[in-house]
Length: 212
Image 1 (spheres, rainbow, N blue to C red):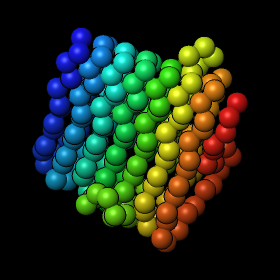
Image 2 (image 1 turned 90 degrees about the horizontal axis):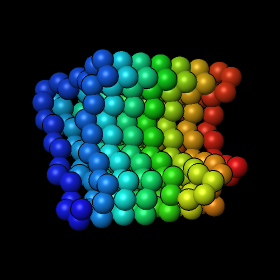
Image 3 (image 1 turned 90 degrees about the vertical axis):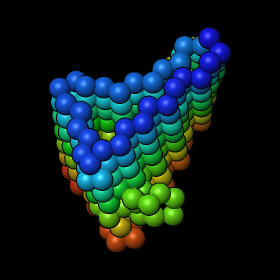
Image 4 (image 1 turned 60 degrees about the horizontal axis):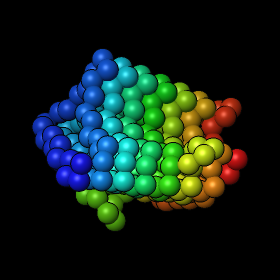
């Protein structure tokens, strides 16, 4: 299939995904996966293993996943994922808000398992490029992950993580991870611009970029 996947756009006062709910855009051929855009006037909340996924499984690129709201929250093993297992690049992930909170093993992941490059993860302010969030918090083993993996096909570089905020707080084993794991691709960069404070606390809490 060469057609591009359709765009998924959600706009509401409040958006909540709960109990394993998901929004998914995939591509399994030459065409690109569609873009997922979620915008809320008040908050976006993912709960209870809910997920937003854009995956490219062929030659096409993964789609952008963009969330914009004053408050973005992820709880209870919720996930936002872009991935590629083919030649295409994984989609980028953008979280734009004043308060961004990940807790209880919630993940934001941009991964490549093949020749395509991993996607970039960006957290910034409500008005997009050039703006800063007020508070970004990761706790209870939550993670931002952009990695390249795979012993046979893993050749693509991992993407980068960029966080623009006034305050960043990592605790309880949470981490930023841009790693190359059993892959010839390069690990990605981690950039944190925190104008007020950066707090990292608890065993295993870290910013991690490595080639293994």
